Image (cartoon, rainbow, N blue to C red; front, side):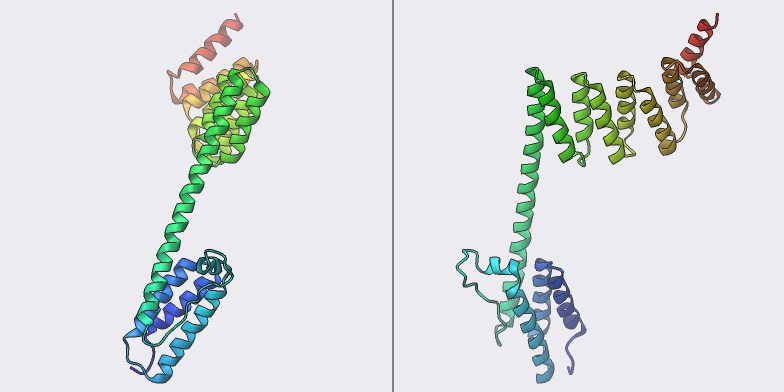
Length: 273
């Protein structure tokens, strides 16, 4: 064979790219594969020397990388070990690089799990403290803890709904509405968030906000007779009788037995007699 195998050259190039992007485990694993790929291949001296030189340059950059400095000197002695290419020991170096890759991947996974556990512990602590403060009558403090939990963990599915329900239980309906609206903004396909936001705003007499949410539902999910009927009921409570009549009739065109719409028209009829 007169030239280095294509796969070996490509793996060396990939390993260098991973190292530049600080993807250390992938760089180690890929260079390990590259070294194994040419360790037993008979090549002209020039081709072999070229591969060794590229591996040496890679290892030199790897040894200087700040992350690898901590790996190679875990006790912070100031005298880190160095990875080097030695003739006749290529396979040993490949094994070391692969082992380091696995070790770093496992360590990263453990750190990720530990971080997640710590975050979940903090979330539970914030929510439970909020509930405890509410039970002891410290409403302002309870609201503060629950809102902090919402701000820090609102990206987790279900968390904002949980906190919104707690605000409902505390009869803090404006806070509940705010949290549910955050939930529907973060998860626009979560139907429960829309329903809860409407109910909380309606209870808080924030009719205009509830109306806006209904129209968001129309844009997101399309029109449905039950939704038209419930909007008609909102308009009735809001004393907007013309809109109540309009949406009730729109609902009944799609479903002649739609409950809320029939109730709305019955109420409007009784008001006019």
